[in-house]
Length: 281
Image (cartoon, rainbow, N blue to C red; front, side):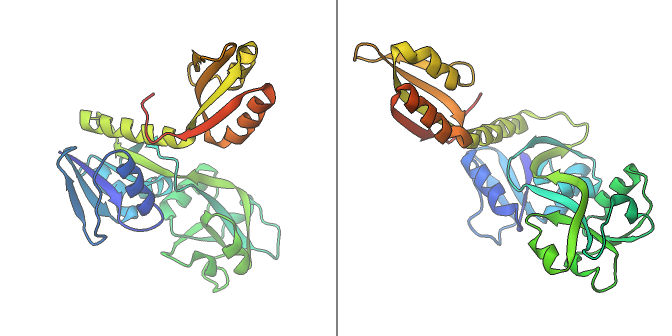
């Protein structure tokens, strides 16, 4: 039986549960459940603290898990990414007081507060800067004002919380993170895990694409197919109406409205967009 770790709470938990449901796996209905058996897929899910998941997978206690790339790197566990899951995106940045223009080289000899000491220590070593890393479990942005640190390193989205604390970001991002599926370093991927990977990849792809159907005059077919080439090639069928063709192609969801405008200008009509719930490519 395949044993998979899932975040039990936090920003990754709901999205991890949802993508697994879309991939055809059972998920808990009671948030107090710590273990869930899915006998149909021969999988057992363990709901754990996000920060602990990489450690359980790296030790070999569990075959795989969903966690954040930042948590994986910070844990220094013997685990590797299999695929990224396209949710839980975040950027890890340095920030310091607004009263001076900071550069990364200014961190040398300073105190850096963070909830990710492993990640930050490794990054500073990589760029050749010596500093004192101060581990905090929360409210990192308050550490400068309270005199605990000179600089912080934390997840940044809009930066609003940092500005309220009198801080500003500087330097390049230490890391761009997102949710990832991981397994133990050096282990071969068993057949059941390969199935999970294919299913999750199918959901990730399905979320990024839609099916675009439209009718177009035969004289404009080549130009229309150039606009919607599909993944391999579009599906084309003749209509009963003389001189018209029906076309179907997968297109990126983010490009949908622009492509519809271009097709309409080309003479296409009956343009329809359909969601894709899962796929295998």
